[in-house]
Length: 197
Image 1 (cartoon, rainbow, N blue to C red):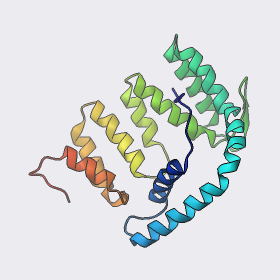
Image 2 (cartoon, rainbow, N blue to C red):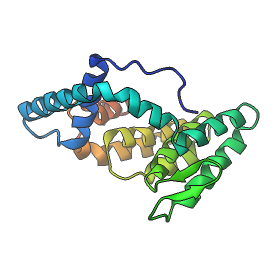
Image 3 (tube, rainbow, N blue to C red):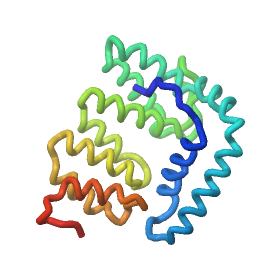
């Protein structure tokens, strides 16, 4: 289920966040100064928003997704599969939704909430050792960011499908970020004599 530890929002946390944001926004082939400049701009923007995060956080804790998550947390203690069913039912209602819809008793869900629900489902499926289901969720997410590729790789490795994981990483190398996370993972999995492309 979702983490319960309070998030400590500090300038250092913002700086780490901008690293992820820049990875998602620009190609690693762009000049280094472009990446650094964009990161500094995003960091400044985040600091400007800092005073408003308390208000935004209170609204988020009262969102329909959070109410659904709290109910699922209660169910998880005695019946994890019932908790999963709760999320999958909400997801099914949102699949073809073009406008916000009411899902009682949790409230009015936006179509974009489907992705948030799927991310929670991914963590739940992993926790239950249902790696095939987690893999299918990750494969359906929009975009081909390194983090999503690595989540798929983790599922494949958990199912002992090492060769598939290597093939996925090799095919995804053009999408690698400036930190080279896909290349690093491939290096961990690839025998020395096979080498990197």
